[in-house]
Image (tube, rainbow, N blue to C red; front, side, top):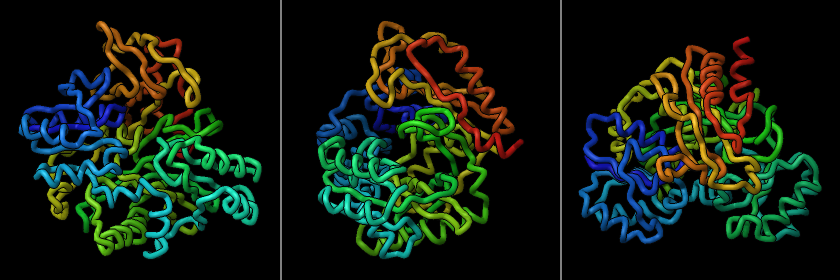
Length: 423
């Protein structure tokens, strides 16, 4: 098979690394990739906004499957146009991608299908949103309705913070994503993520994970795109996985199918777990980043047939096999992230770090004259396996200690909940 992978982050490096292991693979192309994907895929430069150019490339290179990593091309309808050209694609339609592209769309689906989630209000102006937040009181959650690269969510502990977050959205801090706002009830408990490969009607459970959104140790500071993750999520046992499937995922798939927009691809459910059971925080329509890195480390099955089954519309006969080991990834980010940061600093010490228990997945990197340079905010995802959370954690941080990058930083406590459970 010839496969085209779309994306340039740590998620795509992990997917490329796993796809490259498939005996079904002939050639793997990636657009645009990063400094780490050059070793596993052929880089191609395509204008993803010009769907006709992507289609032309696929036809020219006899691409059998397109795997779309990030959410933006899906929300823009790339999967629809590929399918119209009879090109097989892993990823949902533009209509189905609204599950991530619009918080209000997902909330309305939850209302229709009785999916447990936080109470909310949807607003198109700051005055009404501020009034609702004042009426509900703090803590409260403010979300830009559209895609904001993981940065459009504010957990406001005071009304002043909530009002400021609302004003930021409507004042253009997140561009068009903030033209509408969802204000939600604050949910307490333990967050976890569960993934499902979907064919429009059936959902195949595809692993659990927990991530660390806050930039600082102890889960402090502003939200980021993710500073680390681990899998499996100890809080999500077998009974809870079944409850999530029965009360959240299956009703959502049924509702999407009934609305004429069946969901095919990976459905990423962000969940809050408390004594009353699981509640949906949000849906994403792609693999998480950095959750994908730990999932790919643990996946023992060939990934390619699983992706193809989603694209073909039948996962009912598929099975995903997982390593019993624990996987943990620590994100190294550029100083200043998630605010302003500089690009171009050189990263040394990466050679020799990858082995059967450790992989360094690149995100915001580029190769320049044989050197690796930082080119983004989240730059590396240092990922390790172990028989326990503490062993995987020690291996990941031991690898980080060998990386020479003075302009980068990382959290020192990734996986603390899982380690705490062990002790």
